[in-house]
Amino acid sequence: MTAKVYADKNSLARAAAERAARSLRYALGSQGKARIIAATGASQFEFLGALSSAPGIDWPQVEMFHLDEYIGLPITHPASFRKYLLERLIYKTGITRYHLLNADSDPQTVIREVGRELQSEPVDVAFVGIGENGHLAFNDPPADFESQDAYLIVDLDEPCRRQQVGEGWFASLSEVPKQAISMSVCQILKAKEIIAVVPDARKAQAVGACLEGEISPMVPASILRRHPNTTVYLDQHSAALLSPEMRTLA
Image (cartoon, rainbow, N blue to C red):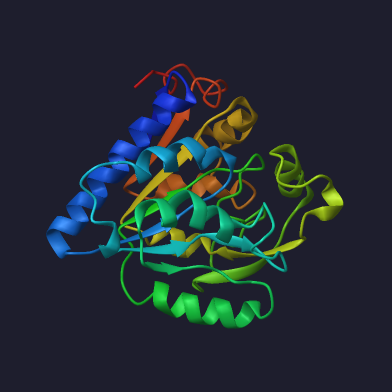
């Protein structure tokens, strides 16, 4: 795993998008198609904006998989990750092959069907974030590091749910769903490349624990250190608690 620190969230996003665009162009050029996993949340705004406008990407040949979604939240809700991906990536780029997690009525069927498609071929690049509680996707601590299922139904812990309120997606904790569909940790790690976009001071404690603490299910995103081709993109604020050797600006 490599960590890169930038002056602010905008320069971080541009650098991460440039790397992602290069990886997509390589996959498209070498195999005629590319498969990606897309993350959501406030931390991904600038990154997805930069990536969706990157030149030279044949987006109709890119197949996108959904990382996680709340159970029981309609697509019309402002916090819906399906709504987020449609508005911030799919409609902007013209992606035609995408697999969204419709968890409104029958999550088990969604897990089975989308999981089967996901596991049918390798994923070229996974875009992820790190939660304030160290979660990876919606795998809150203690995360399942063993399951080989593509997707899991998970319980959301209170710190995770409070983060969603803090980011403005919900007005109160009581409105945040208590369960979600999440891509499993093992499935995320199967991607050929992982790009983690993690700006903002509110992520500093989690970043420190994930990058320099023990690799543990209690700090789910720490497992990224075991992936041979992961790059974590930080700004000065999210990197503030790292050791001086780790805080060198890129």
